[in-house]
Length: 148
Length: 119
Length: 346
Image (cartoon, rainbow over all chains, first blue to last red; front, top):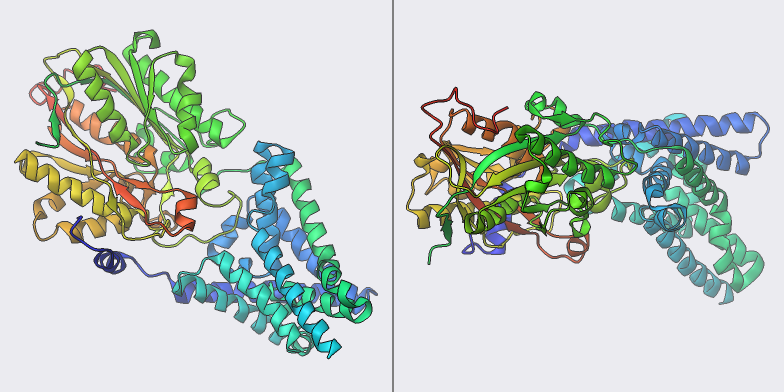
């Protein structure tokens, strides 16, 4: 086996590796993801109907989805749904909520300061960091554009 | 605003991510980072706002919406506060979501006990 | 020099045990476990402690079957999947027995049996080999938080929540199940950085050890009832057959993989099968050793397979290194009188 080079090994692995069920996965991601967005939109309209401003209704709709995602995570249902939904639960804000809440619950065994306190960001960290970084870059460009 | 469009655009964003996960070697984390950055870019190019008016939560609930909210916050803060707005705008605009999620995470970590995975 | 070590006084297996979790109980070997806990917590507060408790329970059960005290043990050789092998240390420290910790990732079951056999064949005495892995502890350490909603790829394997303990004696015996040979494996580059496809990465090491063993021992695969690999799973087994099909079809004919035996492969989320060092320990204890001790089969070649890597090495783009140590386990004097059970017979 030492005679095989890396290319030959990759070729053998590729030949023996089953393909993901792309069509089925994509369809379930589409329907679950679309469903979550539709549900959020209905909530947003409900909040507007109840007298909230457009802006606040949007925020409340987002927060409602975050809350539902978090509770499903704590009840141990989220990961079972996500197994079928894939990106359908990952890409909506439910995925963000799940990544924070699952990290928090999981790290409680290492204590509340260095366990929950530091590990709550392990999965959600990249999203927060790169949203902030790209926001700063955009801000700089926009500021320069205004100064011209 | 059309509810069917909300469903279609939201679903399409998720389906596109799923295809990227299954067909490329990109990890889910990289794809999510790509989506938030895309959100900032779409807002900066002026594409996000008309899209949001057309499909509402179809674009704002996927992570693209998080990036766009940061972009929108930075823009309005720079408009009012100038240079300082670059630093204050992004997280101010998204503070409700981040604070709520973190507090929820902390609260649930006090109550919930993890269960083992099942097949 | 031959890489195979043939023991002058082969150690005899006196007793063995298997402890498992929820999915292991539901699998085809479920009712042969000595103890399973559907909560997988084993009365502990954390998953890491649960794994430690599993190795403690496994050793206690194996001692209990023989009716002896831990004070009669001269050595424990043990390992697990947690950082710094801490589950074995925490779980087994209370026995007060001299200890050697070994790490071979999922190859630890074979590695610990080989190391213990070397000691016992040299020095006599009695010793225990213990191996454990826990699905939740492994998820936390290597992958994501347990409640994280991710989707597993078709190549992904399920880390077994399982522990096995094996009591061996170095005293010469007339009959019994013996470990007669051992061979260390070479570290073979797995050709991939994909930590969700470990079975494929380990298959190259398994093939290397199998070919080396049969070249050097001059034995034929037909001398064995089974040639057993650790946790290649469905994908890794396919890679192994691809590598062996030209020269060693007779190996393929008697090959079984523990990773394909522990769970019902028809279930959707099993994907590529079981992994984790508890896999080969538990399958050895619940499946192969009972068959050997009843005299139904005469000998097996066991090669547990390990994927040597860490979360950091994978993120840094280093290929997974495969390893496959081998031991030959033989039943001696058991075939003719299968009704006379030996001490480990359950």
